[in-house]
Each structure stands twice: as C-alpha cells, then as structure tokens.
Length: 308
Image 1 (cartoon, rainbow, N blue to C red):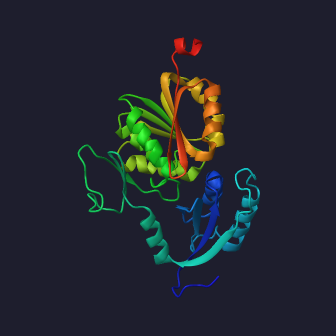
Image 2: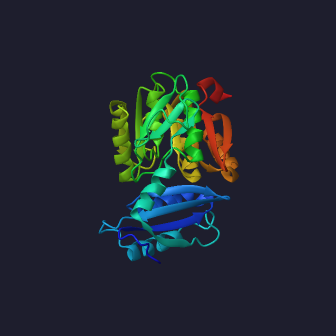
C-alpha cells in the first residue's frame, strides 16, 4: 500500500462480487469495517468498499484484512463461484468523507424523496413536486442510503400498497428507510427488525430524526418465527434464501389480503423465490426488476381463495 501525502488516512477494503453474494459480503464487511460502507454497481458486479477508521483501536488493518479473507472463503460457492479478492488502499480522510457523501445524494422514488441530513432541501438537481414525502437520513454505518435498486423497488411497492392504519414488519431494516417511509405513507405502527446492532441503533436514530419514533419499534432479530399473526404488510429487503425461508412465517402472520413485499433478489433467482412463496400459500405473485435486481409482491389469499 502507498500512503497519500495527508497525515490522517483511512484504510479502504474493496471486494467486487456477484450480486447474489452482495448480501453476505456486505454483512461481513459491515461487521469488520467501522468506518462504513459504499456500495456501487459496476458492469454486472456489486463493488463493496469498507473503511477502517484510523482512530479506532479495534480495527487494526492487518487483523481486519485477515478476518475478511477468512469470511470471504466461507461464502458458499453457489453465491460466489470464483474466489473473492480484496483490494486494499490508503485513503486521505478528506477523500473518504467526500466519497461517502458523494454516494449519498438525494434520490426520488415517485413522491418519496430520501435526503441525506447534510443536503439542503429543495435540491436544485431534484426539484420539488406536489405531495412530496421527504425523508431525512443519516445512514451512519448501517446498510441503506436509498440508492440501491432493491431499496427503490421496495419503496415503490410500499407507496402502492400501504393503507392508513396498517401494521407493518420491516425485516432487515438497515438504516430504517422502509420503516420510516411506511409510517409517512400512513402505517400506524412498524416493527423494524435487524440482526446487526448498528442497524438497530441507526433505525432508532433515523426514526427520531424524522419524528416517527413513537410509531416504530426497533428490535434485534433475524427471522419472523416469534411474531404473532395479525399484520397487514411485511417487507423483507434481504437475501433471496431468507426471503424464501421466511415465506411460511410471513404467510402465517399476515391477515387475509395482506402483502409480503420482498427484494434483495438477483433477477436470476426470481423464479426459485416465486416458487417457494407459491408453495407457502401466497397468491397473485407479481415481480419487478431494476438494474439486475428483482422484487416480488405476494398476496395472502382470503379463506375462500385458499380452499380453491
């Protein structure tokens, strides 16, 4: 590694992986890289860069690199057929800040606008529209800046499906974008779930920032097994295997006519996830794709439909 001229430097670890492996690689790097992640799509690959803070005594670069190499070696071959390699670089602190903030630009999904806290609004590059719902976001070190295709797919479906008074579960809440959007779209209550303590903290902070903290309960967890029935909508923007495996739980929990909104699914795996959800009992499965990623909306049939 060659150090830049500036005294304060961060270590950047970058892994380019197939989209199918992005969830596993991102979760691994999130656990190792205390300075946050930047995720980019590049010619059919997902490029994930994690940053090691120079002031964090727990992120010794050599130890972190070894942990990442060990973790990548354990990712299943069906997700990453070829060995995943790590590119290492020293980055001046001001360049790290600029790169992270450049990645977090305001975005629009219909009438939902996701705006980083450091950006003014209105933004000259993103004009206001009547009925805009503006979400302020500070992702911190948690997944979810709103730029990824899977998040945009979910936001579009929530805008179509959320009804006033709905009760919602957000499985794999990341920075809390989908939970906050659900409340701003009319949901009465959201339970946000994530296995990463950093995501739990980020979702609570962002819910408070957007003045919807009283409507969002944030809990640690990685599945739906312990929930009781009676929900109107469940959104899961996670790995395809988890979307499929949680299908029977989602079916058990949803009211008749309720919706299971899923994403985080590479286009090549939409068919197998749709088959799993149909097997769990869901009806009217509808898929959409964006930039190599897919989403599925599955409806819980009413009792008479289920008999048919």
